[in-house]
Length: 625
Image (cartoon, rainbow, N blue to C red; front, side, top):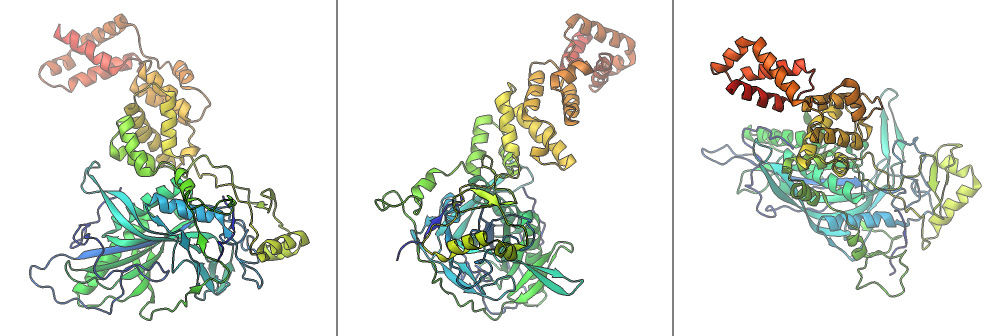
C-alpha cells in the first residue's frame, strides 16, 4: 500500500506533606503492574479493583505517590492536520471550518506534511525510536463538538516510541542544590483536536465552535515515573521549552496549546500500586503541581480514614484549590478502535532507505530532520554555564523566561488563507464559516477539489509561526554582543535589574522600553568607570521612562559622571573629616559602620558623582595618617 500523500506545512518549591515526599522509593524502573496505552480517557497507570487501606501498623513506611502524564501539544502549523483550514487563535466562531472539519459526506483527509515533520522532530529531540511505518485509527466517542463521531489518532502503531525526558529539580533550600531526573516517554502520536463546547448558563444552552476541530495535536504519554506535583510541573515546563526551541509547538498553555492530564495513585512501598484517579485538562504548570499534590494528600487521607479510592476522572477547581469529581471510569469505555480506511500507512525514510527517484515533496527523510534540530534547552544551559561562567540556576532563569523561538517568517494574517499554489489571498468573510465558503462559487469549488482528490498533494504551508516574544535569553545574548562588560556583570543586570523592572510592570521582554543596545551602552559606561553603580541605576530608571535618550545623554544632562579630579576628592574627604569629628571618634572607638556615614556625606557633597570605593580608599588613608 502506498504512503499517504503529504503537503507542506510548514523552580519549584517543595510542598510540605506529612507523609509524602518527592523521594525515590518507587523510582526503580517501571512500577509493578503499570501500563501506558496512550489512549485518551485511559490512564498509563494500571486499573485495579477498589481497594481499601488496612489499619496502619506500627512502624510501617510512609506512602509513595506515582504520577504519570498525558500531554496534548497543539502543532504549530498554518493549517489543520487533514484539511486546509487555517489555524488561528481567537478567530470568530466557526469561521475556520472546512467541509472535512464539519464531516460533510464525500470529504476525505489529506495528511499535513508539517505536522508529520513536527512529530518526527519532537521524537528525535526526546530520544525516541521513530517508527518507519505508523498507522492511523478511528477512536469512536460521541461529543457534540466532534462532528464525525470519531477522532483520527494512532492507537496501534504511533509515529514515535520509547524516549526519555530529562529535567532538573531542586532538592534543598539552596538554588544550587539541583539534581537531574528522567521520565520515560512511552509514545508520541498524531491526532485531531476536537471543537469547543461553549456553555451559556444564562440561556441554558450549549454552543459549538468548530474552529479548533481538526487541528493537529501531538499526544505525548509519559510513564508514571514521577512522585509529586513539583516533578510533574518541572517536566512539563522542560517539555514546553523543548517544543518551543524546535518550533513544533508554541506550547502557550494560556491559549490551550499545551494541555495536561495527570494520573495519580498512592501506595505503600513494596505493595502493589493503588487505584489511580485522572485529573483532566490542566492548562498551567502551577495548577498542575497544586492539583497533583492536593490529590495525593486527598487519597492518603481517604485511605487512612478507612475509605476507598475510586477509579474516576476529576477536575481541578483553581479557585478552591482542590480537585472535584467529574465522572467515574469503572465501566471501561469501548472506543471501538478501527483502522482509518481513508489513510494508508505513513511511511518514513532515512538516507539509506530513500527510494531512488522519489519526489522530495512527497517523502520525509528522518536524517534531514535530525540535521535541522536546533540546540536543545539542556545543551543551551550547559553552554551558558561553560561560556559565561554563570551559575546553573542563572542559566535556568535565562532560559525559563524565554518566549517562543525566534527567526520564523510571519504567519498569514487573520484575514488571509493559504491557497493551493502557496500564495495568500483574502478569506471570504461575507458570512461565517461554511456559509461564507458556499457564498462564493470559486472557493466552494477549490475546497471540494482538494478534499475529494485523495492522492493530490494539499496546500503549501511552508511558513511557520511567528514568535510570541523575543525571550530573555536572546536579550541577554544581544547585550553580551554589544558590551565590553564582563558576562557576570551582564548576567547580574539582566536577571536582577532588568527582569525586576519587567515583573514590576508585568511586561514581556519584547515590550521593554530598554533595548539591548541601550543596556550595553550603560554597562560600558559603568565598566570604564565613567559613572558609579548608583548613578547607573538612576540612568536605567530614566531609560525605562522611554524618553528616547541614550545613556550618555542622560549622564550629561543629570551631571552623573564620576569626579575625575583626585585632588578635589582628597580635599572633600578632608573637609568632611574635619566637619564631623564625632563620627571620626566613633570610628576610632571600633565602630566599623561609622565609615559608611562618612562615605555618604562625601557622596552628598559631590552630588553622587564620586565612586564609593574610591571615597573609602581616600578616607582610610587620611584616617591612618
